[in-house]
Length: 554
Image (tube, rainbow, N blue to C red):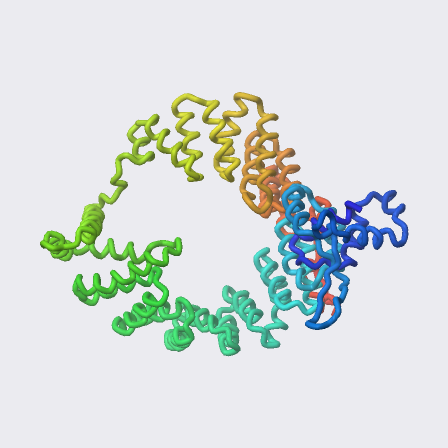
């Protein structure tokens, strides 16, 4: 029965763990068949189909096989879970990514999904704008005792502008001693009741969530309670909380205690690097340390940063250049070292390059020194030469160079070549070239063919790879005056997993003057069938059972 395989594929791509409860597949099959087809399903047909699909084929695992386990030395035990073959799992993620799962599948998931998959499934529902479904899945998680489900519900509601309802979900858990829930309660209280937030951050810290000391200290410092803030920040620093020593140093600097501040800043910089390196060097200069002293401290930081190369901002390198640029005497002394006989050639070259760059920075002239880079050539009007270099970079795999090649072809009056390269950039995942494709392709082939291609390209890249492309298509449809088509496209994109589509849909409704629909869309999301949701209760299950039920809009 191929529909069983399709349902298993959809359940997996929505975020369910590998073992699929048999009852979930049995409950979901109804939503993959027409009413007449389902009426023809006889008792035992599904069980027979699962047995047939579990048979190995050509030496590989069957499409749907029972999950078994075996204790050491014991017999194999059959479970009530089913596993989708890996090759079908991969096939489903690729081939079904533009297909919306049947609306009823979400109900089957809420009723029968494995408890440990409920949070991931709720995230998939939220990405699609199914806010009611997401909360229902998290409520099922809370009822099943899934760790983190209540906090995840609170986070969802807070991010959707419902802080009061969010508090209802996590406050009982926080009062029971859950550290994550305490942190969430504290965060919800920070704007309206910072004093209460501080108390909860302290409780969380005392319960083992040491990051709470940092949060409490920052709130107290903001409120002018400097002695209490210092105590909390010292606790954060002693616990090794990232940023704790830096925040403590800022407070001490504010109090004029520069020497103490510098001790903590240096410790933060030496342990974690980052912007603390820049701040430490600045404070060392302010207190009168010699240029060589500061340089001697900075060089190991820059060397360590170069070894790790985490891809972040090179703060130590920035601090080193800045320090040398600010100290002409130090540069002069280092120049004299370069000129000494017996100096290693590699060291001489490296030091000379460093000083030259610092000299230019001091003059305010640190720019691209290589006049033969493609960007420099383009700025000089040497377009053909720039094109050759950008094309080499594009062919070597530099993704952003592809769009540059396209733009240069257009500047050189070659629209067909430009369009081909813009399309190549789009196929590489670049959504920013969609307006250029729309302009050139509309002139050459017409608007309908253009939008068909753009939609197809956006769909090929799916909901996970480059979701911005679907947003770009909708915006171009809006600009072209095809608002209704844009709304249809966004509805489909959202139901198939576009994480931005449902919010963009609300923006488009608002731009079209459909204010009430836009407001409902933002507040309640929409149903899997594609209709904007009616008001639903955001209260947790326990509150609803007590009868204190209210809708999210009350």
